Length: 472
Image (cartoon, rainbow, N blue to C red):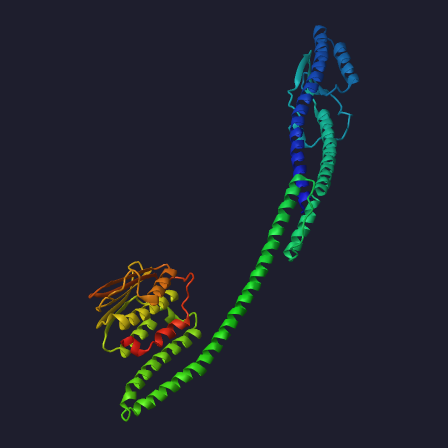
């Protein structure tokens, strides 16, 4: 059922309840009215019969008795009462005829029991005759029933008219809801430009304004989603282009630089093999072999970084740092490097581990260049709460004499400090003359670089440092 039909039925049902309540009041009033009417008619009949009975009692004779019976028969049925005359032997001498008003019709038994009052018969003694008067409210009850049927018919017609009128009025008043439903259907089909007019009815006007505001926000959201999708697609394409460019650069480095380094190393090897005949060339040739090996490692590292998978778990572990330590030990066997790695199996941030690698490269380079140390201790640990990674690098060298620990040791030290601060970490360097130096770095386990990103040139610069310079 439509909303107007439902509301019309509700209003009609409420009106029917009101009519039923009024009907109950009418029934009570009708019962009282019938009681008063029958009581008044019975009182008149009792008075007349009482007078007649007293007259017969005063002058008892057969003629008086016959005259009373004749008079009663001539009167016939007394209004709203039935009269019965019984002689001294209990024989009925007379009974009033049935009513002629609406003869043959009777009110339903349930209605009679509802509105018809109960009356006791009235008796009077006239000589040897007994007069019995029976109050009869059947005609009044029948009149009340007829009135009820007429009122019920009119009530039914009025309720039907009320239902139709309410339904018609509500349908006209709620006609804008058809526009609302149509607008909702169109919006659900993807027509987000659908708008409602502002209706004159205050409630529907508020509904229209709310719908239009919702449609505006929905259209804006759709536009934003389209823009985000376009930006995402552009980002994907840019990333694909960058990956292709990185692969191209990696191929060029491999084909050009790596092949050239390999050729230089091969030539240096040939020179070293013939060093017995020319002793002055043997030592430089061996140095060239070592340096070119470091250059190959650096180029290999650059190639791996250019082709690396962002999801590669090795980039989040200490494995690259361990490899660098092993290579450094091979190149500088005269310096004892003790390394401790205790970050556990949990992966760490790629940026943090990469920064630690660069710090260790720079620190070990400084040890070789300046410290004149025989022993280096390296330790990488995870803090007890697991949120920080702590690196310490200490040597037993000369402690960088003539340099200020606060100022650092050249551009390499400044670069390390900048890297650590860019990741929100802590950097400390201490050098005491004659007692060595100690470098301490503390970084978040999952740091995200804010501004400084390590570039591939750092690895190459560390790898191609001339061996003679490191040993100077």
